[in-house]
Image (cartoon, rainbow, N blue to C red; front, side, top):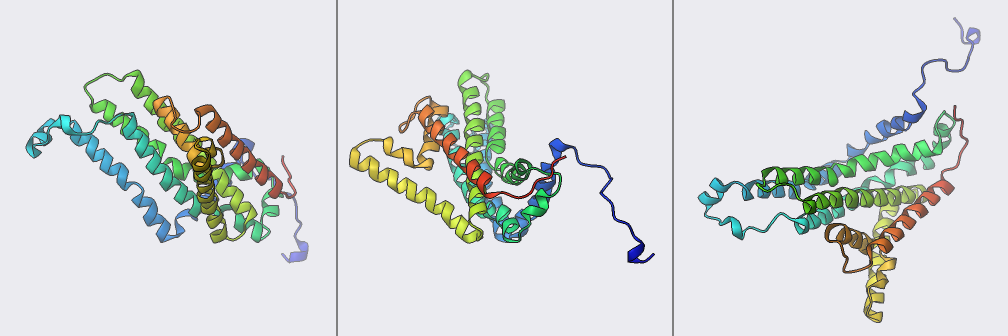
Length: 285
C-alpha cells in the first residue's frame, strides 16, 4: 500500500484514566534521575547516617552485646525527640542537596526544546504535568527522609520494653509532618527554578544562593536589632522553627504558626511562578 493510499484518523485506542495521567509524566521523568553516577553515589551515601543510627538503636537494647563490650546502658544517649529532631534536620539538608541537583533538570529541557506544547497538546492538563514532575522529587526525597525515619522510630519503640507513649506518638507525627512540609517546599522551589532558568547549573546555583543569602540577611537583622524576627526572610530558619515546634512544642526562633504561614506563602508563590511560566495549548478530554 502506498503512502497516498493510507488514511489518517484520530487515536481510538484505550486512554489512561484522567486521574492517573500524571503518572505517565512521573514514569518518564524518573528514568533519567539516576543517569548521573555522582548523584547515584551521593544518594546512596545519604543513607549512611540512618544505617549508623539503626545499628545504634539495636545496640542500645541488646544487653548481651553491651555487657560483652563493657558499655553501661545508662551511659548511652537516649533515643528521644531530640535524637529524631537532629536526624530529621540532617536528612533535610541531604534532601535539599538532592532536590537542587535533580529538580532543575525536570522542566527546563521541556521548555528549552519547546516540548511543553507537545505535552499539553495531548489530553493532559498543566496541573497534571506539574504533579507528574513533582512526584519525581516527592518519591525520591520521601525515601531518604520520613520513610526511613518512621521505620527507625518503629524499631526503637518495638525494642523498647516500655509501651508507646503520647510523647513518642508526637515524635512520629513531627517526623512525618515536618519532613513532608520540607520536601514539598524544596520540590516546588526546584521546579520553579527549573521553569524560569533554563540552565541546570544556574538554577541549582540560584537555589543555593536563595537559601544562603536569605539566611545571612536574617542573621544580620537579628544581630542588629537583637531579635529573632529577622528569620522572616530565611526559609531555612523557618523550617527549623517548624521542626522545633513540632518536636518540642516551642521554638527558639519564630513561633510555629508564623513560620508555617511564611513557608506556605513561599510554596504558594512557587505555584504562581509555575502557573505563569508553563503556558501552552491544552486539550483535556
